Amino acid sequence: MSEPRQPAGALRAGDAGRRVRLQGWVGRRRDLGDLIFLTLRDRSGTAQAVFDKARCPAEAVAAAADARSEDVVELEGEVVLRAGNQVREEPTGEVEIVASRLEFLARSDTPPFVVEDRTNATEELRLQYRYLDLRRPAMQKNIALRDEITFRVRKVLHERGFLEIETPMLTRSTPEGARDFLVPSRAHHGRWYALPQSPQLFKQILMISGFEKYFQIARCFRDEDLRADRQYEFTQIDVEISFPTEEDVYEAVEAFLAEAFAAAGIKSDPPFRRLTYARALELYGTDRPDLRYDLTLCDLTAAAAGGGFPPFEKALQAGGTVRGIRVPGGSGFSRKDLDELTEAARAHGAGGLVWFKKAQGEVTSPAKKHLSEGTLGNLLAAASVAEGDLLLVVADAAKTAFASLGALRPLVARRLGLVDESRHVFCWVTEFPLFGFDAETGGWFPMNHPFTSPREEDLPLLESDPGRVRARAYDVVVNGTELGSGSIRIHRADVQERVFRVLGISEAEGRERFGFLLEALRYGAPPHGGIALGLDRICAIAAGAASLREIIAFPKTTSGLDLMTKAPAGVDARQLKELGIDPPARSET
Ligand code: ASP
Image (tube, rainbow, N blue to C red; front, side):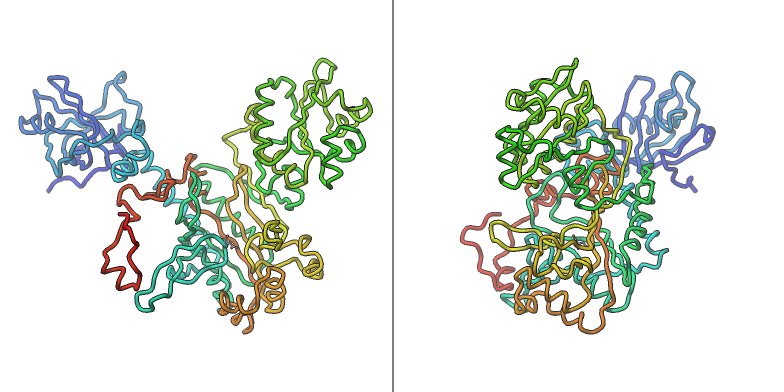
């Protein structure tokens, strides 16, 4: 009987003297004449084997001489310690296997790129040969981390009494408002399933069904333009709770996020800081603040008013605001830095960016000659500008001023080296507005989805001042990235109808799209609420990966292609006929 298979990456000095049998992939081969070195890789890591022509059977030496990268082999031999100065820098570096046997289990063609972490393969090539790319230790590590995170989330939620319940993939349009992926029905020509944008309606129904605590590691589909941090199909940690307060949701999420990030050695320090939406905008210009550094915004409206500087006056007369960021030690920013910041502010809609520097007791600014001494003094005092500081100011509609200064914060922080990449600062952003206003259509749209509950005290404003109604909605954010969002839901049919009315969803449309939920709400719906978090994003942040594609085994490119399977692909005319679909005039396969 041969030895049991030994994981290559687990060999240590203590194994010296053992006979072992390994199976795995050949990495590198070095032929030094008398000695042939092979590295053997499996999921556990790599080990080095040596074939010594003087001692090893000729057959094994011949096989080793013939071995090529990515051949699958079995080898046997004795573990020996390497001399002190020959210890390699890897976990198995203190030992090697003096081999006595080598057999090929499968040969490999020459791979299109070297299967090592440092690869110069383009991403296209990596995705086309994903099976080779996934063999690279870094990808093995990412996929294993993803498994560990998913397992921990499941464990925490299971132990807290959450039931994992699957919901259909073939369903009808759900309310997240993105474009649907549609699936034609063969049995009912002209009718279509939609792949779920989220399990939103089903999880609410599950609460009405009495399950009280639900979660699902749920695949969701949204036909939106892709980016590095977006895929057509993605995975959510989807959660719903009956009879909850916001605190119950926060507590459950903090519990599983703490475990999940701990899998990557990241501390999340619950309970997370809370910020209302209004406060987040006021302080950071965004509802996704990066709290690893300060750089808070200040309100300069009162100080600027009546100062005679045309850009400020114009913004204020139009009902806008004047906001700034004091950049401590920023007086050293060059003309080029300031031009770049101005560009960035413009890209977010600002008409321009006004700057003030204070250095050696002197204030410099392109706006200086337009401002009275008094106004200048008031502005600098309102922003607490000190020696060596820079003040960046935007005067515009509030939305634009916040968006542009919010976009400058991270740029300035990076420029000053204020971002501590080793830290992860989590927070909750709460009390989002229930509705946003679409200037184009002149109508209100739901900031989250139409089932989000207004705050009880804002109910009287629903019809009279919808823009001021705050939602019982919350986002969880880390380092400037949104990880998830959710809300306490509407559980009363009358409130749901009022919200639909504000959104311009007619009774007929409401019944047509969400009739089953509206009906279910009439049979005793418990108060309920929940959240959904992006698992892919959590894994990418935990892994320190630049793109979601690094933590998804088989992702799509930014143009939505699967380069390995070549999906999307053409289909037979026969398949289309069965589905009752006319073939396209010119088929593009
Ligand atoms: N279904 C929502 C979403 O996917 C999240 C939630 O409200 O739970 O954005």
